[in-house]
Image (cartoon, rainbow, N blue to C red):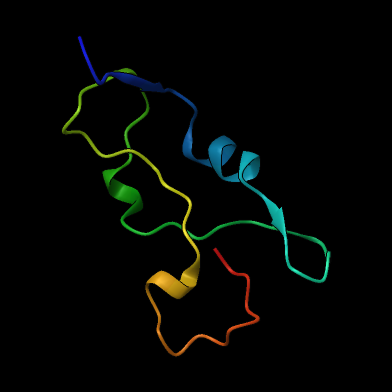
Length: 71
């Protein structure tokens, strides 16, 4: 069973667990989901199933201001 992982937290709990502060240290921000409907909590995720990944918005929107730390 090489490559198996577990991600069994509900979406709202996982979102709160990934809260972060911006570069100025201001209040906690919650990340935005992309393709949230693809996330399905599971104790045994196969290598080809979708898993959440936290990325900077800069990876998706090239016009985002450089100092924006949104994820």
